Image 1 (tube, rainbow, N blue to C red):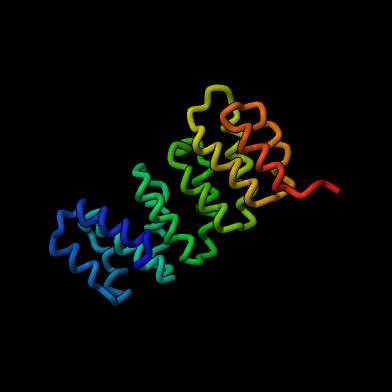
Image 2 (tube, helix red, strand yellow):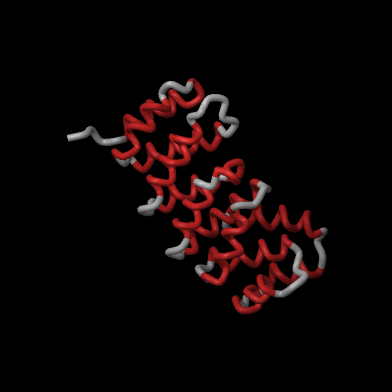
Length: 191
């Protein structure tokens, strides 16, 4: 069993109280039955999350909208599971959605997983979104250092020269300086 699926099922088993619905959803093999859980009124969040995750890792694009909503959830484990499923989903809309979530200043407290997902996707939207998000995090007393650090590390992993200026600016921030040095070292020299 996939480690993310194991973690998800353990968490959702506790959340559901081990109900018959939980047991039923873990046993369903039919993608259409799982997709129905996403649209049926009155389904608990844990049931929708389980159905969306299972569909997403199977590559069923009907899970896209539910997974994007979960990617922007206030609960970090939900966001992490959604990011994992979205990375496996291979939907062309994923990078745009992750970039929109990562750069949304009203939801920046929940931007960590969208930032990490952008790095995994290596999509055309990734570098510009990470640069925008990091630049905003370089303001004095910004409380979202984990998001800033994820951007610095991600930009280093992507190795795109467009990130050089913002990474150079990040050197002035003690919390980010070491990571920025490593990130800059991963960017090929300018010619």
